[in-house]
Length: 139
Image 1 (cartoon, rainbow, N blue to C red):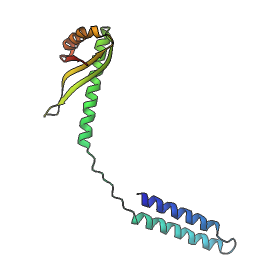
Image 2 (cartoon, rainbow, N blue to C red):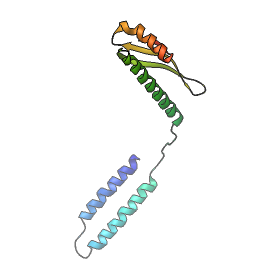
Image 3 (spheres, helix red, strand yellow):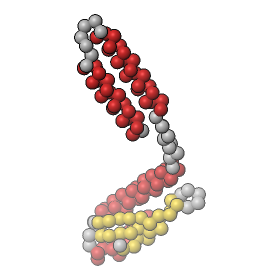
Image 4 (cartoon, helix red, strand yellow):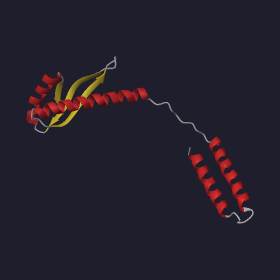
């Protein structure tokens, strides 16, 4: 791809230089016509000789799985954050320890939790367990 860009750039520079060197008068139309043919044929040759080996083999399966996991993580994290805030507990950081099962579902093993006030952890852990059924662990 780099080669084709370089070729086109060189073709443009040469064509522009020759265009400005064209004589005025009777030969002007003939020279511009010849330059046009040179320019177009050079572009065609550059494009046809270019190596367009582009790998379109994307790992879409892996990307989709990562996206699904991120969406699930963020949804559960927001829900836990709202539950804690409703109970006047301010989380600093909430992370999920997740696993993807063989059937494709996402399993949450535990919540890794950092709170603004460490003494509220037991209460927060109890609330998370009651509301979601997930065990909270202090980070």
